[in-house]
Image 1 (cartoon, helix red, strand yellow):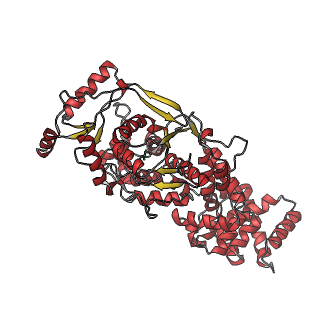
Image 2 (cartoon, protein in one colour; image 1 turned 90 degrees about the vertical axis):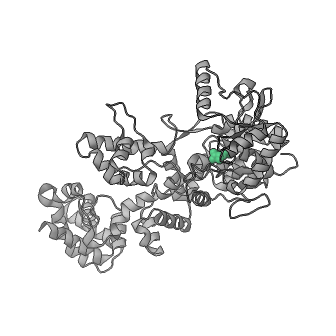
Image 3 (cartoon, helix red, strand yellow; image 1 turned 60 degrees about the vertical axis):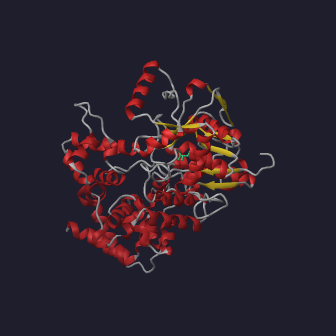
Length: 555
Ligand code: GLU
C-alpha cells in the first residue's frame, strides 16, 4: 500500500437491517484495516429518500457491533472527514456539481419522462447497452436553471468524456468498458439531491479512501466513478469487487426468499381449504385488495406482488401459517440464536479462504490470514448447513461466560421466554443443553421447564406414544415412580439416575421405558435435556407436581 496508510470504508444505505452480503463487505474491509493498522470508515449513504427506512441506521450500527466490527470514523465515532451521513453533506455535493457545470463536464438535462421512455424503447430495439441520447445542442446552465424554476424536470448529467474507461480491479483484473456502453448519467436529481454516483465519488475522495472493497453488484458503477474522479481531479482509489452471494439453488439471496417461504405455505393452506384470501388479510392485517395482490392469481396470470405486504405484516402472517422465515439479514441470525463468532467465521469464507484446510477461524486468526489476492471471482454459495455446523462448533468452543453472554443477547433480542432466567439458572440450562446447534435448540429443549406447572402443554403424539400406549404402560410406570421419587432423600442427578436404574432392574425394562414417561410427564414432550438434568432444573417439588398433574389428567 506504499507509504499511505490504508483507508477503507463501508457505506451502507439505510434501507433496512444489515443484509449478510453487506456484513461480509463490512467484515472484509474491517479485516483489511485491522491487519494493516489502517482506518475503517463507516459512512451512511442516505440520499435516496424514497428507499429510506426510519431507524435503519441504528439497526445497521447495532448489527455491526454485534458482529464485533468497530469503526474508527463514522456515526458515534466522529472523525476529521465528517459528517458521515450523506444527507448532511448536501452543500458539499452542490459545490462539486457547480464545479463540473462550470468546467463544462456536466450539463442540465431537461428531458421529460416520455422522452426518456422513448429513448429506452429505442435502445431496446437496437439492443444498445446505453440508452441516453445526449441533447444537441446542450442546454445552457441558464436555460437549466430557468426550467428548474418553472418546475420542469431538470437534472444534472455528467458529460461522459470520449474514450473507453478502464478499471483496475484487484479481484477481477482489468475491466474495460467501451465508450459506446457509457452514457451521460445523472449526478444531481431534480429535487436537488445528489445521486449515489456523485455522493460516493465525492465522499471517497474527501474521506481519503485508498481502497474501495464492495460487492460485485457495484462493479458496473466503477467505470462511472473512475470517469467522474478524473473529471473532478480526484485520485482513483484501488478497487476490489467481491463475488456475489447466492442461495444453494442459485437464486439470489434477499427479502424475496421470506415472501416465497410464506407464500408457499399459504398456497398450501388455501389449496387444502383451510384458509381463504380473507384469512391472509386478517392475519397480515392488510385490506382485501392488498392480500389479493400479495398472493396473486396463478390462473388469471397475476403474479404475486410481494411489495404489497411489509415485513411486519409478513412476520405476522408467517406466525399464523406456522412458517419459520429463512434468515437473510444479520438480525435474523441473531434472533435465531447464532453466535456472532460463527456467523463472522462463515461470512469470512464467502468468497475467500485462508488457502489451507482451515474452516474455523477466530477473528484474530482471520486478521492474520486475510489477503485480497485470495478473494475468488466465482459466486459464493450460502450453505446453511455449513453455517449450522460452524455454529455448533463455536457454541461448544467458547467459554461458559461468553456463551451465557451471547445467550442473554439472544433471549433479549428475540423476546424469548427464557429471558426471565437468572444467570445461575441460565448457565445450568446451557450446561444441560451441551451440543446445542443454535440457542433456539435451547429454547425448544428447555423452554417447557420454565412455564407455570398448570400451563404445561402436552404434545398429543408424545402422550400417545410414551404414556398411553400398551394399556397405559407409561402411566403405570409413573404411578410406581412417584412415591419412589417422593421419598428420595437427596435430589441430585446421581440419586435420580440411580433410582431410575433400580427401577429398570426391578421391572426388567430398558432405561427409555422409565425415563421417557417421566420426561413426557414433566415437559409434555419427548425432547429435553438428560433426565437427571431435567429433574434438577425443575426441582423436586415441581417434578412431583407435574407428574401428579399428568396422572390426574387421565384419572
Ligand atoms: N450504498 C451502497 C450500497 O449500500 C454502497 C456502494 C459502495 O460501496 O460504493 O450498496
